[in-house]
Length: 426
Image 1: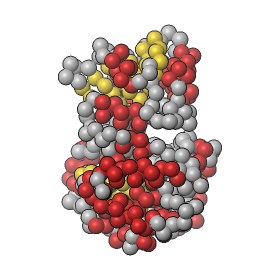
Image 2: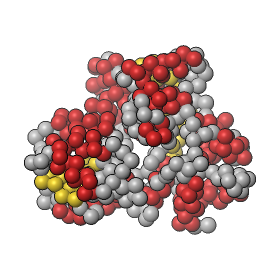
Image 3: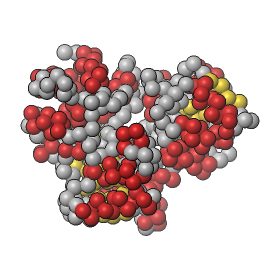
Image 4: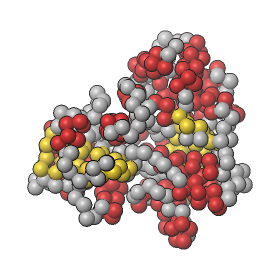
């Protein structure tokens, strides 16, 4: 099997949509030798900030000398981003081997009970991390938590970054319902840390933690000693990253008895953290600046607006925006519209893309004075804005990945961004 054939096999699993439940994942893990039993985890859920918090935890523990696995989704360009050991992407040869190894196991599931892409990849990652003898795995949920395939592990700590509106069609239409799904990762007696601020969401997390006899710590950026917060500020832009950093630090502190980490390792790890596509600033050879941010929900858009107002208050950006149709794009457009005098709307490389013309109409309604153009592609928008000194590309991580690939910032992996696609299955 070649790498391209392995990727095509994974594409084939997309036909089976998404499945919320743990039975199949547990069964596949058992067929693979229950690799989760050989590993230690920090399990991270939440609406926004999961990836950044995972990146901070990974960097801190790697700086302390641990061999750290990192499991995240979606990927920006290469599918191999989803499984990393000490921030090295899984090699193509290893991904091919795992696909070949798992194919016979998948045949043990009846025809009407196909495994989904995420279920298979979750167990493949567990197998890979166990083979790599990882000391710790930073383990991000895919969607929700309670019925997410990642929830077959028992972690050292459960982390819930925050609770906001996203994926309401799967997780519920109130913050209480969404919180109940995210808090499904809380395990009996396992400490839980959260930066959730909405009272109705926090009340649900508190109730579930109490039921599970899990010690809960609620973390806010202000809760970290000011001097320490200043010294340990991560290099990631945005006030929200201070909250993510505070949550990561509180998690490290909560696990000091199981995994001691010296202060200098915490400092070094946080200072070196890298997480592309989230308020990532690129400076082109001609001096132009391009800010990339996957603000794909309303809270993300508000965080982007706050960051622009704080860090780029003297610059008025050109906005390049594309979103998926199932997101709250009308409100996202209203949030971002006042920030730019020129806005280009584009399609996202997905069957679920919102129509750029509808996006443009939403921006015009919110900011009639702006120059707004619906473009046929991201490439067309970037060409149209090539003379602009400051461009912000946002609205979808898919779009951010396409931009990184187009600008040569990431090794091109033809067709792999499409593996982020999913839909509700059985």
